[in-house]
Length: 486
Ligand code: GLN
Image (cartoon, rainbow, N blue to C red):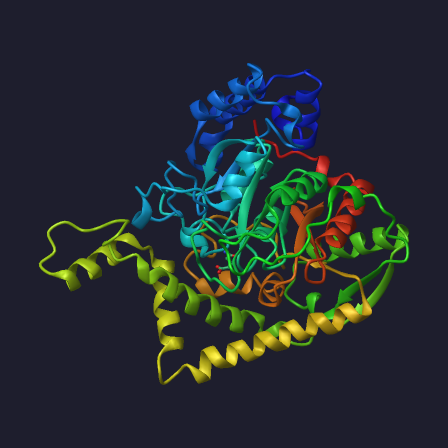
């Protein structure tokens, strides 16, 4: 086994036992990047020299591998999360040269834990998309099939983990952007409960939905990375002041008798037969593991897409008003007056999907339409949340597909935003409800594309989600498969 293909906890074990050095580990990833990154385009910025300098501090004894459970392990961060002194673009021309003067809380926490930042990953512009085709810079390719998308919007973070271009990464999930690319790339991706992880320093897309979470090679790594970033932060008023349990310590507790809900609305017509059969087999595995399976209903599921694609653009139109060329970001040369400067800076700086969302969001918030659209969507959101609360009276966790389809071809849906939005059908409801969810690989299509299994849990019960995911993973061979690239 080569160093770059190991999980984060395996790498840390080697470092602790002095069987590998930090420079050796970082170098293994840099070599891997040289060979594979040109094919995958997972990164917007790679930080080889900086990472090697950090690694040297460990090898010279100035930093200690024992200082945390992940000290010395290389990590990548989605380019929507601020890291002081490092260009943070959000996949957008408008922030092409933006260098944040401060660290996001999660970046600070990774650094405090001694993790080594190795790059900033590609993404759909401002996290708007499901394929990473909306990046202003490059299209990331799916390591399992370079003709296919890696999913999105955290496509770079998922592809980097799948292609062994980092040991683990952070993504963000507003409506599925961690879980869906994780499922397309055959890795683990977890969206924590809204409020579990601080978003201070995360560039906002839709503030009532955005969450940061781990993308990793196995569930144990997801538990450890979540542990590192979770917790209350006085600098994010939406972060919740609750104790953070020790996620790793309960992964192996039995799930015998645990009630797993199977929502009938997640097995609808239009879902690819191979996805349905892989998820059904996963449910059989849970039966064999001793879980008790309960049929449940989440009756408002079908309204999730409509509600999300009003609420998210509404919040985006407001959040993105700050990019006007004045304080930071792209500014046109030679504008005659202030209005022209605003207009042309924004026209040049934003891509088509971002403009579409700003217009949609502005429209649904406008005086005459607010009640008909935004208010209605918020009411639907309450019903969707209630669906989950009712369901969790009957079950401890919910098991379902992540996406109705596996990774699609690059370009296949790029010209048809509605088709793109529809593919988010199974991830949006959990985002609207604010509950935690994870994607783990549960099989492959006949074309060898990964299929994701989604596990959802009640608010702030990440430990249940992780435990249910871990036991499936350990009972099945899928997570050990590697894409044919290298
Ligand atoms: N695909 C969804 C969208 O385009 C979700 C994106 C996300 O979670 N950031 O809005």
